[in-house]
Image (cartoon, rainbow, N blue to C red; front, side):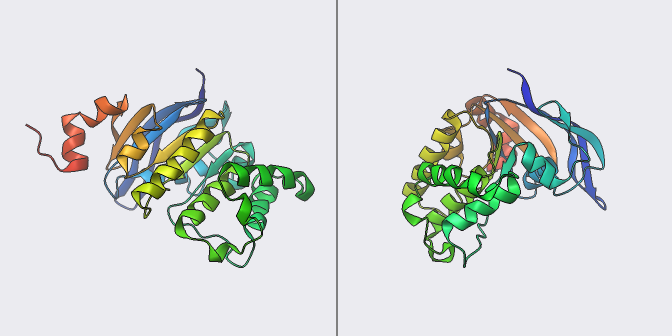
Length: 241
């Protein structure tokens, strides 16, 4: 399957700290890719490079065949790159539906009335349709996570980047959210998902990459990657034999 997203020898440093070290990666259209690694491994930086929140020092990025290396973040979102963040920060005094309209209008670049039906459909898909007219600040954590997911989907993404969306949830809540993410992927959306809750990740991802010190340490079939001695040492603290 053709690559939707390509990173070619991407580097990023902050002074002496190298947070992306010659990262080369291709994500196929329709794929669900999981990303794990210890804190500070460069996972969120990877997302920031893809979305345009930070610029690489060297290397190239392509999306759907277009070079996006120097492209502004808002133009990338309108090409079809959507993202959720670790900690949801909705517009608390706006309704849930109004929060989605922001993504539909400004993220996807669509008209207000054109966005109404799409935003209602997204709320239905993530299980928040009955909360459409509720102030976002009154939602529970699980509902805020669903809203964070919905705001990204309102941008009509071809590529959905999920940054630790399961964090802070109970096991039951996490399983509920995983069911929603699995349905979104089955609908055709390409997903790259950073997550520390590995069993949740493995229930969706067909391929896994492990990052450490800004590099891709290992990648491949998820269970084979998790059985790698280097991965177990770096990620789980199990000394290599």
